[in-house]
Length: 627
Image (cartoon, rainbow, N blue to C red):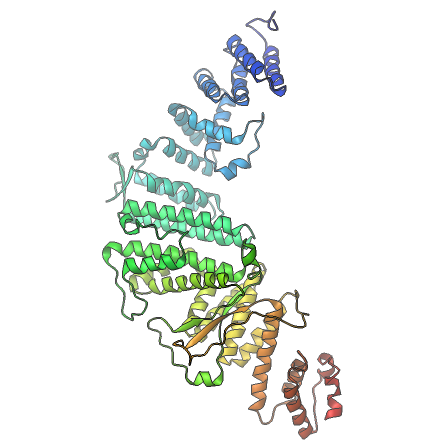
């Protein structure tokens, strides 16, 4: 009845009225009425693009996905050149190339969810999908969208992969790498690692063998195994860098971390299957959900490597490549998790967070003088006899830090156990630019300290400090680096560097709790080389201001006390500086102050112009009268 008086030759105004009526029924939640009006409008005006195009959205709003798809098919047959249709189909294709996170950020009109449109493209007939992809790829000037279009075509039409020769694959991968930034959050690198590489590695149309350049259009594209190993390395670099960058930006590290390691492990399995060594990791003990200890035990068993041997390790040819990549992935994951826990990055567990609220460093535990007498010299071959005497206040945290550190150390030694592995690891580090990763350089210093070469550790960190000084965003790494340098200098009795680095560290410590009168620290069980087979002990030292500041002052004081005891004629400047420091925790060092007073009484003179500027303790202001 409502259509009485309307003719087939209706104007645009009539079409607008019909569309508005359908939308009005939907707004009133009259779905049945809306469906009836859609059917009526499409039947009356089959040649109206406006009616047919709007029916797609109206069908979707009514939950009629199949009818919406049929409307699109009809539109493609009758109105294929209409600009609005071309734009709409291109939008559908673009949404289909997005992941869920990207789709969630898309704003859609007509109350249609982006996720519905994303699924809609995959429901279209294959010929329409192919036509839309080819049209979009051929017309767009956006290189990233073009790459995504070709990638989508290979996903929806796997049988078309052989039509691309090796030159096309190489050009695509090179374009994705070179056209955009190489940072972990670069759009092109993200496209390469997350989409292109997994598709190519997993495709049954891509095999391993002598490279074929596609001139004869062979049914399967054959690539050298080196291509797959290179893609695995690019992915490892991308995911490792993404984890680090996300954590530095205070994002949710734990969620990003496990997802990245899972994707990287999935790619490892794909490469292993493609290159013919999947059988060596069928037990799936190399996955990121297994403990670092279990994963390292698997590598040892698989490769036959022994930590206690000083001989060059030569794995069997059939497992050498697989062992290398399994060890590389475990190395970087355990290394990062060790650093993250030591730096307090992205810790979501409330119980762990209270123990990792402040950064920690690995330091040498200084033995008493009688213990130093029985200390055996360190030998570089094999594993050093070092006791990891960790205590953060939580046994669970202690074990997690120790397990990750031990796994990283073991993998590091394994990857340096023969010339081939060592060269390959050096190549990866150079390509990935690990020299600019503070967390990697911190670990190499820890390795040197663990092996007893504190001078080498000091050299590594002094170079790292020069790089960190100009990077204000890495304040936490600066504090860790300076505290380690101070600790090494104290152990080595390097007085010049001790005072220099300790002073610099104190200027970088935040004033969070420096005024705490009584500092409480976690204690470790006293270590004695006489009671065990260990020759050395490594401990964790907190970077918390209320702990690091007293440590620095005490270290300088101990150095100056030793210097005072061995110097028959100390200068007034030295004595004055010592008096200034003796104010700290007064009267803890009152006996040393008494020794200074005795020296000054004997001299009967004392010239230190900074005395009244820095000496503020009322007890020390009576120095003149005591002399």
